[in-house]
Amino acid sequence: MKNEWKVAQTLSDMLLFENQIPFFVVFELLKLKRDKSDAATLLKELLELVKNCYMNQVHKLTLIHALPSCKYNPENLPKHLLEVVHSCCMPTNITTTDEDFTGFVSKQMKTATELEQYGVSFKKSGKVHSVFDMDFNRGIMKIRCFRIDDFTETLLRNMIAYEQHYDLAIKYFSDFVLFMSHLIHTPEDAKLVCGSGIIVNFQATGMEQLFSELRLGINTSTTSTLATLSGVINNVNQYCEMPWNNWMRMLRQDLVNSAWKPILANAGVISISLGIAVYIKTLVK
Image (cartoon, rainbow, N blue to C red):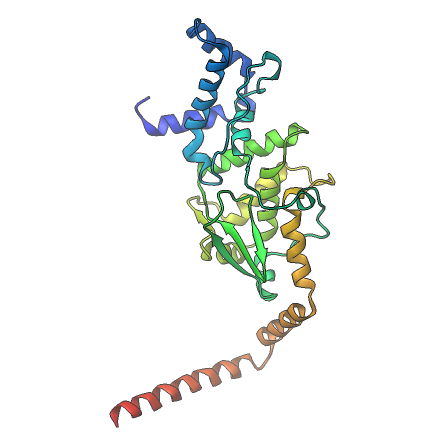
């Protein structure tokens, strides 16, 4: 194919959950074409091909890491192409501890605008390779900058479908979508997170609508829900429960809802105007 758009569309169709065929069928077809090649060498070649085909699209969310084991074993081949891509996306440098990974979320995390009331700020992290590697420390939540476009939605939707239908799959994508659906619940939440440079949105759909629709395919009744991000979420909730941060939230709300707000705003304008007048007077002298 010489048309890049057709190539992208074909790759997208090949990743659809409903389009998967057994991986051994693809592998046997390749063996027929290269009948004199070693099976282990062919398997590595095929896995490399899959990795190279999806690298550019997957990098919008996470860097592709090591390939699955290339030791040829007819009984332990990947089930299908989707599993291969999912395996390539699994992070190898996650900084969370085993306790964080297997932990449970004590309560649902607040939205971005609610967290802002508690003094939480959002920043994009340039030191991590994956959106799964989030960090929260001293009121600052750092998330890798990621891009959302039509293919990204396809990637997320089908990775979630795979994770929900395969019990042994680590639920990185499912947990990430649930996390973002809690964080971005309204257009104001989306504006706050996008304004921090974390999300670059190339879709017409609003962020809150996108993640709300994606989470419909996730079973949230299991005890392992959000397990891969439990450490970050529990740290955020503990931060919000601290007396000082909760008091600051109430103070901010009181100022916003106070009847004195117009008077305070006018006083601020007058103060700034007087400051400018004094500065000009100083220059004239």
